[in-house]
Image 1: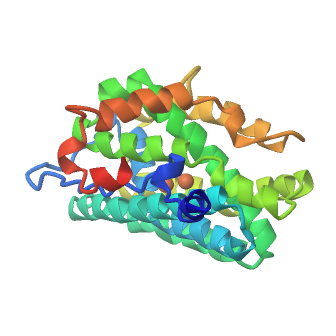
Image 2: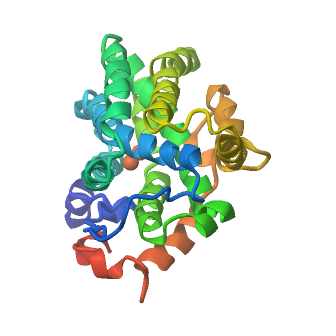
Length: 294
Ligand SMILES: [Fe+2]
Ligand SMILES: [Fe+2]
């Protein structure tokens, strides 16, 4: 009986998805600079990501929330609340990073506007398709997260303080990577809907994101710096580079027997949990709820 009650009240942390309150503070003294390899094009893609995360993650949460009352399994319920908590906190900390960018003259609101337009179009489709779109975007994010955590060029050439936020976000994306999909599975989501979602996300999210990136380059007066831009493109899209590796894994989403857990990241997550939150971990001093997240 006690055991049943305990299962009914599981928390996100108890099922491996702890919402961690992290209190990132960016140095006010930090001057504006291109923080990824001193390269405008590559740095601006991070401004774009950070700008689109808060509205994007709100959409993810909403599309899962639409089906929350159908979930009876206590473990999945707890995973969903862990997912909601983690995404909400990602949005909050990216808002803070976006303030930092804004204060330094990066127009981080521009990609947010583009993506909000795209999300409004997705919101016209059925709640089932919206959830399918979320699973597609979570698949992208999970592979992006794996690259963030393993890419040596990113680690060697980026701002070390900013990296901590990306690493925390990436770890949690891997921890909750199956949750939206498991809800989609529960409502009988199909391969056909996943394929439709692929087109919808490509058209309404992918295109606006790329357009906002180019627009930012134009605003920054960087579009015609061909040599620098070639260097940035190579850093992101070259062989084995960050974004190329993510894109390489996109087609697995449309397989008949797809599940996010096929992306094996448990060992990677464990090593990063230790590195960030273990004894003397990089984020221990800014982690505000270590007991609840334990
Ligand atoms: Fe997130
Ligand atoms: Fe996520």
